Length: 442
Image (cartoon, rainbow, N blue to C red; front, side, top):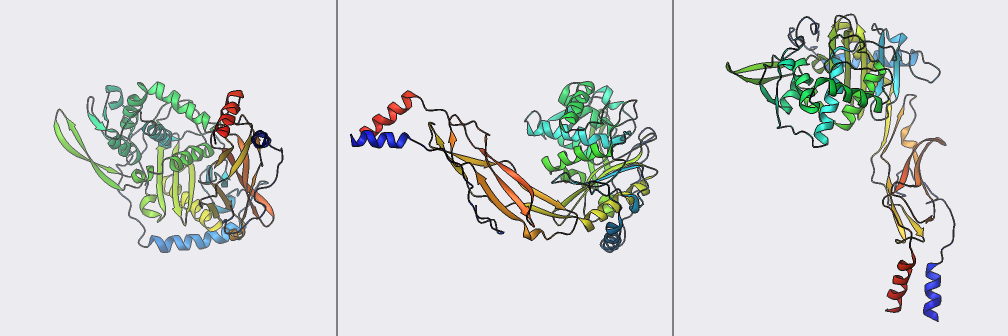
């Protein structure tokens, strides 16, 4: 009789909810001017000389940016409008990469031709294919007659010439090669047209609502349009999901080897992005210029753990493009401070009533970042964990079971959901019979 009563007691569970745990702790212990692509090759221009003392120049620029940051106009959302920075380009945006926060913008949603900045999406799809195991860096890519005919910005691949995937990435990221872009598009999708369909699908997934791609390299074509904001979105996806892109986008000069029927010869790649030499914290990403698009860039930089994306579209010349991008980056580093919670978080478990497991362990749905543009003391951020005290089976994997919240000066600034790390099936008659038998055998 005692064993039966004990078994009945073990199977009974009360329904309650409460905070978990109640206290919070600050420490978290508690729980270059390229030539136009329709005329010549980007990268053929004379290499510009970097500033004699770029660190000093940057410091002076940041001092000016700090003054400008206090004076810059803002819209109703608090985002800077950029008018007081004197941005000459008709369209621009400054975005912080980890949070996607737009710090400053100017006509950021105006549809314009992007020139070779298009290749950011091409590179994104290449790295997607690499991560999915569809292609490998050492794979051989054969250049078709069509790819070799691209003209404009190119590395002069010949029909039938082979290069590795990694070499093709260098040709695209460093020298902005149209021929290499099309060769990779064909290697991944079979045809450039099918690859462009993939580009537009990926753009839709990223929320690039004002973008339509017609080709994979950025040559002027009717209907090939995007916006500064959309470029920032795809740039953010590339650099945060595949940070190894910076290994290639920061190459200044490198040789590749052409092996054709004529024999073997070296060909020099020179980075079209002169900010790599002119701005100390530059990490990439991609320039572009055509007669219609004028001068464009998505310039990335990292300083003190803050990664910024400065997009300039339709600047009148390469010097203005680089000046505008530098002004945006200096403004960003003068204005922005970033809180990132990179600590290992405590394990959260929740009891399960009526399941084949007595509890389920939680997993955190990502990490938390918060960008401040108002000079707040981010050391004052506090964390609190909350979870339901009990779940009723069945429990689905990924089901919300709680959250980790972040507050600053009494205001919640964000949260991370805590999800069930595994599924728990509902216990049936057979399960309880088995448990009873196991108990009686003790």
